[in-house]
Each structure stands twice: as structure tokens, then as C-alpha cells.
Image (cartoon, rainbow, N blue to C red; front, side, top):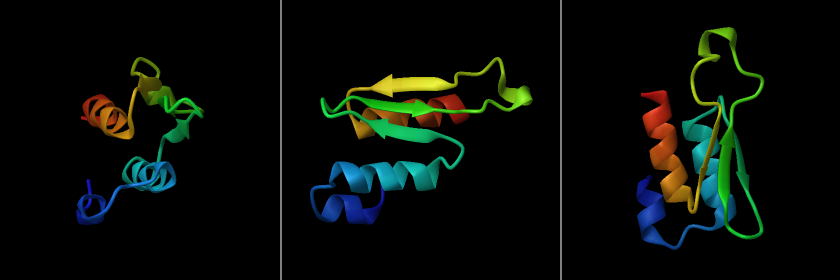
Length: 71
């Protein structure tokens, strides 16, 4: 997370923008029910056997899953 995130409550739009900046190869989606997804599409050939769809209950949870998937 950025220092900005700790200075005030981060909106869903701000969290989505941060995730898109941190993980540019992923599409970030947040539903009206506050469910978060990251989807890599189209999937590059060299990543066919890697996760291409992740989900979480929060932006923080999705960030953790993205970090693990891209490590």
C-alpha cells in the first residue's frame, strides 16, 4: 500500500486505481457487493498454467493474492 492509503480511508475507486498501477497486466473488478476480482485476459502463452482469475473479499485481500500469484 502507498503512504497515501494510510493517510485517509481509501475509496474503492482509489484502491482499484492503485491495484491497476501495481499490476498492469490484470483487469481489476469490484462489484456492488464489495467482492474483488483480478483477471488476466488475454492470457499470454507463457502464463497459461498460472492463475488468471483471482478473487477476494477486499482490495487488501486481492493485493495479497496478486502478490502471491506474480511472485
